[in-house]
Length: 128
Image (tube, rainbow, N blue to C red; front, side, top):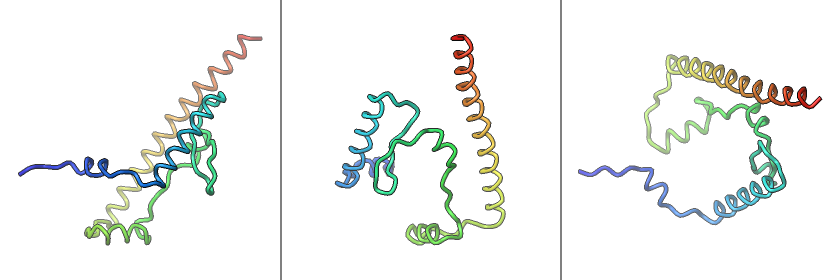
């Protein structure tokens, strides 16, 4: 009996033309932004337009969450023919974990922000 890692099957599928065009556009815009001198940004597609998105804006935006009682989740469960694992205990544990991770991330980003802004203030004071 042999084991085949499913990630190889996913990687072996060639990108379709839409994926190729999107990746090419995002990569070109990232290079153009870097050559123009921008730092701390990412490129993305917003309402069918490519844009430079500051990293701080992405961090402030939080993360997308899937409603476990919503249609998207239910479709995924039905498509994959998985049993329903979600119950009230599971939801409570998930909420606690999300809140804990959000607090850790917020503290981490605050430390980074303080270091970055603290370094700029220090340089400004030295220049004066």
